[in-house]
Image (cartoon, rainbow, N blue to C red; front, side, top):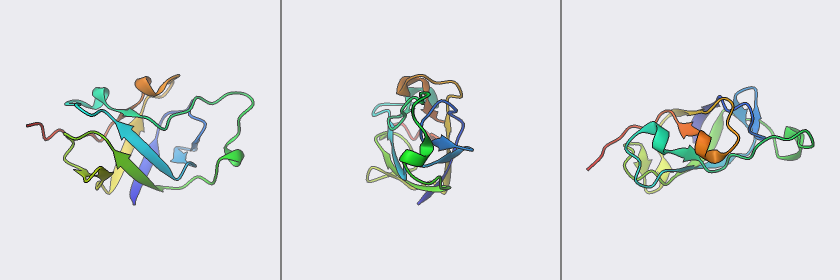
Length: 106
């Protein structure tokens, strides 16, 4: 599993920079830069939602990866030891990104 540090404060799964979802999906099929990726698992936090409903925060999560140009993508799974998800004040998944994306573009 990959260690994840998330700076997306508005995500309902973020608790103290850890993810309580357990698994995430990185989008960005044809990405060549980090800002062309996104955390497709992002869900905006609302006043009615709490992390207690979705799970326990963890440093290690399973990461499915659709960013085929990323050097860490091995059979649609992230092989990086650790990654960061950026987008501090995101309101949609398109405003997030995999800050650890490493392009091995063809």
